[in-house]
Amino acid sequence: MSQLSPLLKQATPVVVDHGEGVYLYDVDGNRHLDFTAGIGVTSTGHCHPRVVAAAQEQVGKLIHGQYTTVMHQPLRRLTERLGDVLPPGLDSLFYVNSGSEAVEAALRLSRQATGRPNVVVFEGGFHGRTVAAASMTTSGTRFSSGISPLMSGVYVAPFPFAYRYGWDEQTATKFALQELDYLFATQSAPGDIAAFFIEPVLGEGGYVPANTEFLAGLRQRADEHGIMLVLDEVQTGFGRTGKFWGHEHFDVRPDIVITAKGLASGFPLSAIAAPTELMAKAWPGSQGGTYGGNAVACAAALATLDVIQDEGLVENAAEQGRRLIDGARSVADKHPEIGDVRGLGLMVGSEFVTADGKADPETAKAAQQTAAKKGLLLLTCGAHMNVVRMIPPLVVNAEQVDAALDIWADVVAEVTG
Image (tube, rainbow, N blue to C red; front, side):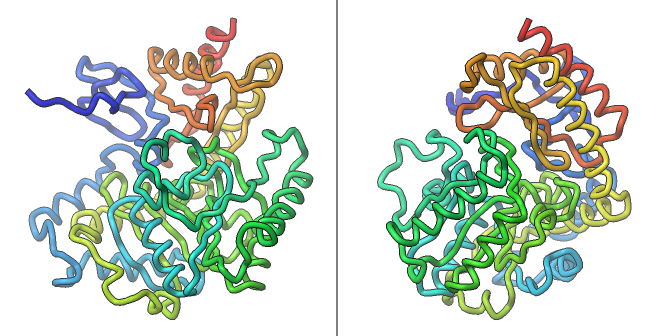
């Protein structure tokens, strides 16, 4: 008898029978508030009727039409529709299946378009588990250990993580930009750098938002030195942060945007978007793949866009996100074991620390596990796995947010008492 790899350990004990909206129902009939959303994937909730109907209809027409062999209508329509929501000027798309694949596609494009070998990533960033993407990931060594040699040409600069440094945001931002300039002088000349890769909000790195001054500094340096600014919106895109794209909070212009996760409400689909002139600089044969742009996934993505727009889910993410972070901060105010609460929209992280301010992954894990027993599904993240994150579907309402916060308050009191 075969079995799953022993490394694939579940974060919760739940064995799911079915899902509906913000809830998962286990095989014993118990209902769980799902504030993981499949790690930010089920943007429209579990099994939204319009997404289900679109996928079912498409399955009866065409399941797979390999998109460098034939063209199919869902892919054509999705490409047109994405033009309505993509940042200005990013009018060309290439589709793959996962976030890691899209990151590698953006890496390949930026190197081929500029003729430069190096990239700069930022401390705490997560870009994937495939070799190149893992080489660019610094949110934890668990993603890259044991597979050396890693890809060369990756340089790491500080992210303005004010809480980690014990500084205010302005000081952390000034430091991060100064260190980037020092990297130019000591590790890689800017003329050798193809791109900056950055998440608008660190995901696996601990739910840490960037800020306007920092991203403006990257944009200025990118323009000055001919460097591509690549925004990894795998987790922050499609309304998650209370704006359609996470970088919109910071008024910055990307050269390439990477999207996945919430794009198709759970169907595997990802993409990179860039200006046509830039995309055309990719070398022949460098873009392709068997399953990219799958017809059923594209149909689901079209329905996802309809639901997000028709139901006002971006606005809902902003409103419920404020409610969620305010409530999480209220809990933290009563418990010094939570040193910081941060995030944007429906990305909220609570960082657990010891009395002397050190990371406390044990209490974070205890909180996450206790919450699961009480019917609230959460995940941990951060370099030390001491941040408990809340990432509900965008359809979450005020009543469900309050229910989650009530459970969370009981959980924190229990594990810190």
